[in-house]
Amino acid sequence: MKLLVVEDDTRMAGLLHRGLTGQGWAVTVASTARAAQDAVLADHFDAIVCDVMLPDESGVELCRWLRHNQVWVPVLLLTARTGVADRVAGLDGGADDYLGKPFAFAELEARLRALVRRGPVPRPTQLVAGPIEMDPSRHEVTVDRRHIQLSPKEFALLQLFMRRPNVVLSRGEILDHVWDYAYDGGSNVVDVYVRYLRKKLAPHNADAMIVTVRGRGYRLATAVRS
Image (cartoon, rainbow, N blue to C red; front, side, top):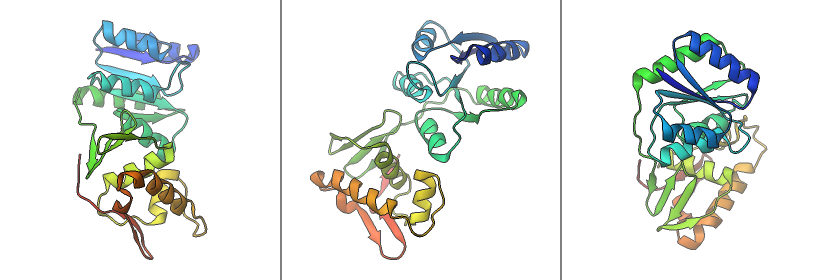
């Protein structure tokens, strides 16, 4: 089985190469996202292990490039950042699994075996809610086919709404998924960002889709397909 390891830390790359080679993998190591792209274009791999923090661009951006170019090889991301928002960003970027550092080598190998058994699975990337279309892997949003620019938090908030259409989401749930911390009852950050998001949608007459449910939270009032 052929494996591409994308890791710029020489010591970690060496450990992964030795350990995985010892388990029977044919391992190729790339130290940058660009080198990984070249490797993927030149050869076939059964799986990719990729560090999130790379010197030229992030592992998440590499995942987006792979999926945009219809490369569906399973990708496992390695990172010291294991917050909910980070995991969501990686998975929505096209990764298949996410393993936090430090990790047990046996777990890494087990996860790789599971990914290879599942094989490459082409997945639709678009979320659609009325006039709003979102491509999580490319971090793009259009309303009536016109692009709008959202901050990372605005994007994450809209994505949460689009993945759970017509469901009332409490402020606590939104904080947990978008900001990754517990709701203390005193923060108004959710209300502030809902206002920001509505303002971005207003020129396209889509702001009314985000409905305030008094005493409960917010919901996206539309049917969504993915």
